[in-house]
Length: 301
Length: 331
Image (cartoon, one colour):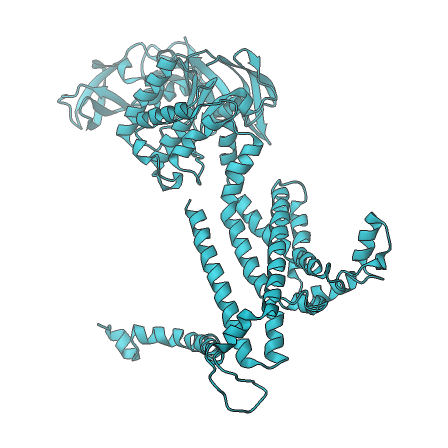
């Protein structure tokens, strides 16, 4: 039932729709869907991208080797440590900062801008700068710590010691991304109208009770969203850690994405790395789906 | 329940005067209605008493005790907000339980359930107890908001237009319910409204506010029959009082510039001629829109009046109000 005007132009509504959507669908297929399917395909082979030899299908062997390899579990542990503590500190400090900024004291806008600055820097630059700050001899970080605790600044190295290196990357990521969590929490806090606190005040709820029965439940969906973003980001953390520790010392800070990159582009075990990538993808996707379900439940509550 | 006294309370927000020297005694067990247009200071008065705002000067005593520096919790007031202010993440039941869960009250679980069921029944929201507060219509939210106040036994109930978004039937039901709750519990209640029927039917006292000043305080009958000014007289009465220049009828006293005529102060059938412009049959009564010497007059006639538009009817003032140039009543 195309109208005469449309027929005159020779294109139906549907054709025009395809014309507009087509290029993006093509791009999506070419750069997202095709590589994904190709990766899954490669993960069942012994393909090596730097050798020109016949590709053999070896079934689930790659998966078997990855999942039974104790090194895989070490990198997973490093990632889990990084993930847990960065989120823990970022939520704690981010919420506390948002709570204070929301008190609307004089100059709170200026403070918000200052606090948000680290987030705007490039992770590579941040990683580079912090290697200087962590320098045992000349680094500001060691100097500050020993200023309060006493002792020799060059007696320890944040990125050179097995016990400290995992914390070194946690500190930098927290420094950089706490502002992000703060901004989202601030949005949550600002969404609570004053009149609700006034009603609670008249209902004889103490400040403490108001905090736990009004502030926290109403900010929780925002907070969970921030955790989701940070969780996904930090699961695939690469640039910052590469700049800071390069995965070392040894492989104490070798998070999964660094491990994966080494397998794929240093050892050139393309088939193996593809299987690894599929495993990581399924893990993130699965965890995120479960998390989003929980998030929706909180929102509906 | 307690007596609440405001003495010389003033409040400014920047350059705006919200309240100026308001003194008012709200007796224990009374139902006081504040009348006045938007911006007259009605809500500010409630907020002063609740402790959400503090007066610049003057004092408020609740139950004989000065409330200076006290928080709303310490004052033990229950407030119904105009914008409802329900807790959006809680169910209706949890909203109603919220004030009872205050550690200051120590309500037992059984008492809490009984009280909530009772209040929900009164307000006709029993079937909504499991709903989230955001899944309600405006009228339902407003009733939950009233319920959240009624579950308690505070020193004073403060209600800011609590029936404004209900439909006519529910409004008249709840008018009767609120009045009987207040009368049975001998509760003290301060109530803000635009609706003069609410003022006339529920109030034991009416306070008329004009730009932050309390211009008249008394029983609704007193305000109706003995207003101190044109402003006061226009607050009550349906249809509104007719204000005309004093000289359109003979017999005005010296200094009178306006004459005020309520429908019952217009005697029909004798006096001067006026033209019937329009006749409104309301069922129980009929409203006449009259044109008299280029002035419009609205009055009430018999339900089965034979008058129709274009007819001539004779009218004469009967014990009218006279006001001077400033609007004050001349006695």
